[in-house]
Picture 1 (cartoon, rainbow over the protein chains, first blue to last red):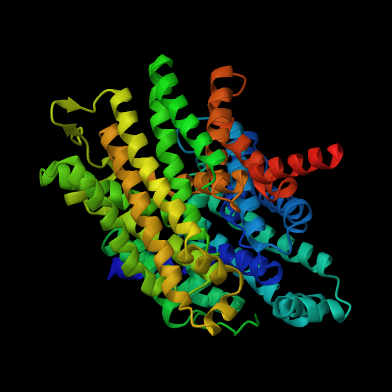
Picture 2 (cartoon, rainbow over the protein chains, first blue to last red):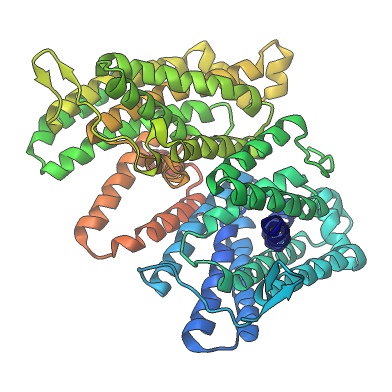
Length: 289
Length: 317
């Protein structure tokens, strides 16, 4: 019972992170048609920034995370301006370029952090909240979940309530038609990748105290983000968020009761099955060719 | 094949055969892997002919490698039997995978092939019996033919050269045949090809299966020389290198990927030998090369050569 309750709490918190990883990927793919393979590396850069500023140089955690967000966003904007924009007609070229960025960012992290064991950040919030008899929730995790959910809420509000958000969704639906309506595609692409990269930076920054930080931590992020994106439906942000929480629950329970590798294998198989049965995902929209 | 190209091919093979014995031991090793990698990229090009970029190719190399290693070590098959069986195993598994994978195209196929490959690779890690887990299988038997054993690099290189040359000739014949032309038709005008009665699903599958067969053989060649096979030899990182070789070389022609793998291997070794850059920084240089080549030479090195030739022709005229 204790393990079961704890797993439920863990999967909700994990779901918040999965959602942050995936919405960025969905936004960038939706608006620009590019699969950003370096997305996991943006998360990794966020985590490294917090490690460097907070753990090494005593910058307050609440200041280090915004800096991580800004850094990831700037990398994202540079990628859009110099790599994705010149290759807009050829999505494969954009994907290959993002793989190049992935290599470069990993080496940068390696040079900054040096070799040796994985980096760790001491949690700035160290109290543990005792709920009832069994349940113990570290306040660091609770804080991360609250921030992640607020960020998703702000994103939802931006996309559904603001004019710019409408424009962004219009571009995702039909790029040419939006351009004909006078929507500036380049500007919208900058916003999409800016927001997506910022979410990745935020996720990385929040995760830093909860996880081992290595230059290769992005690998796990990108696999999870792919699974969540595909299962949720490539064009659908709400689908991705729903899938993030479902997959987090699945992954947490299989990891707790069986084994982490099995959890990933099953996740990948579920993704292939979804791709076969319903390529548009559980909440996907039909995209025009 | 024109007479000129035939002469070039013979000259290259003769060059490798006569010059490698004078190289240092480590470069003889490298030459073996280079020749194997040529087979990897050329077989990958066959898969990409239909316009689908698969990320499962290196995992298929692993399937061949594991099949050959297990057949020869556990079942006692000689290498000459286990190597073709390795190709057939890779072809068989990819034939099964065709059913789910080719229900998708483009982006979905890319992600689907990545997922399927990663699932296979994680199985090698998870199922310690029979795959040996993360440390894989070691002490893979060395190929023996009569009294000759292929333990030393030079005999092994000659054997690899023979196998790879035969494979390249077959792959070249396939590409220039009616089947190869149909594959290109499936790439550029899939609806039109379908309208004249071409089963695009069948041809896409055929390209994947044949490509997997040859890369499976490449995998067997690699691990019987190394003596060990592990899941980490076939990760997505290695697949990315194959993509880099093919794209930097230029995937429009048969020789493009070969040029890519040869030039980048020499570049890589040059960097390493010169000692200017820390080996840890090398992936970043690869990344920069990849980005530069996408931005400034979309047709790859091969396309660059073509551009120079046409420039020279214009200035002569």
